[in-house]
Picture 1 (cartoon, rainbow, N blue to C red):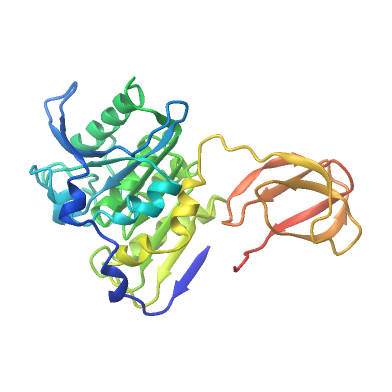
Picture 2 (spheres, helix red, strand yellow):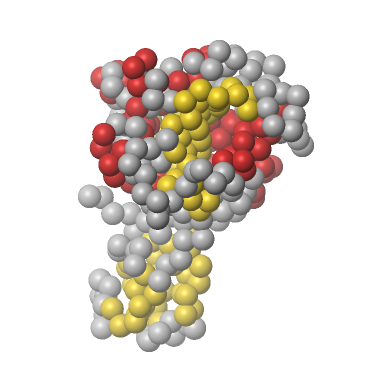
Length: 324
């Protein structure tokens, strides 16, 4: 799904990112379990946790300008929208912000521009996966294993693509921003809902290499949610993280999401057809009467949802985009 937005920018960059005072809310840790590679990371724990609830975990991957081992600079471009008072009230979550090194970035493309990643993850990414597993099994944390999310920009965007391909059953959603990906691994990404952001004039991560992963996913029938900023360069993450629909979309995703079907609901039927309803579909259009045993249904972001049994008169269904 391609969405182009006209020239945009500088104003929204003022408040979207982390400040030094806010960074103090992130605990400092070093993870070195089971490896000779130490991973610095910062960790945010939401306030007012209820004992009977579980909360999402957000993994944030920084760009190349923040690699190192000081365990501070990786928060420089962390979007404060994730921990502001509104989101803390509406979508409280744990947040993991690790720091990679120049010698071990989030992802590596040794055959670039062929964009083929090595068989094994970098040491940084391997440690991140090990750390997430440790956090998920911690008795002191209340992390929902069905709501682990990942986002990153630039190098972190590449890392986002890479890590969901290496752990295809781990993440409930991913938001890669101005990153490139190994298209040979597109099939490994199909089960992870994606919202991909690009700038049409990106000359650091060539936008053409970014577009090919979108095309690859579309060709295998799993088109991602996709926003390309017309006239935008590489530094678009301020605009992306300011998208008003971003957080509601992200925090509505979870693994194993089931779309419950009910009988006997009239859905914008151009003919008197009674069929099935999914609680997560807003708009359907009937193309023609039919009598199949099942129908294919799609979410509004273009993702195919499993086939459903027809409970009454059949129909063919297509997806429609709703502008609110």
